[in-house]
Length: 228
Image (cartoon, rainbow, N blue to C red; front, side, top):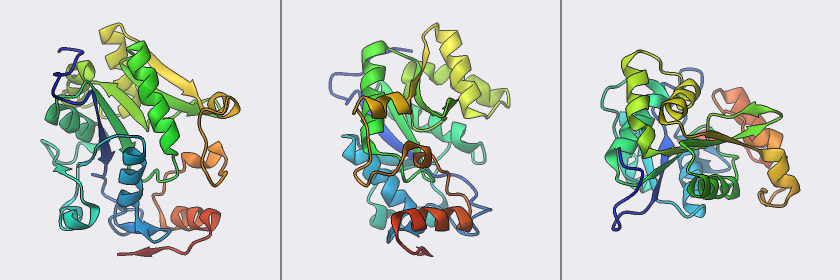
């Protein structure tokens, strides 16, 4: 697969992964509100602030009904129930951009500056996949994925290996291009990334999968939560 984009197609496209079952939240977590806005709106806002288009991959039927509210194209998985990796593959396959930039819908505290820096690093290095780490642990999302990785990612799905990070590692090995992991703490110390409210990096990667986790994030931001 070519590692370049058509001149008429942007070299990067942003996607919110929102195809989870939300069983622990008790409601479609894409539509649960944080600070008065649905989580999906937060994720789309992060991508757009980073200078990217914003589409939703793996959207549920309930979320599709709110398309006018979120104002973003919806991309359905080719086969339902394959998890985030299915959404990644469907998204890359739907566009001609060289880079797919992915953010899961339950990560509303990631700063746009981090997403933009990951993309800039991917453009500069040619890495197959670019992610961040915090406290020494690599984070699966946000991730910048070169479209040349798509065949390897699809092979992982076919083989029943649906773990995104393991699939990213395997794609990088098959392509003989690196999987780049950028330590967030170093980027903060260098002044390259930050949140305007000063929230420490350790909190940026909180997955909001339960009402309790949502409540803690609301407390950190000083708001109360609800569901639309």
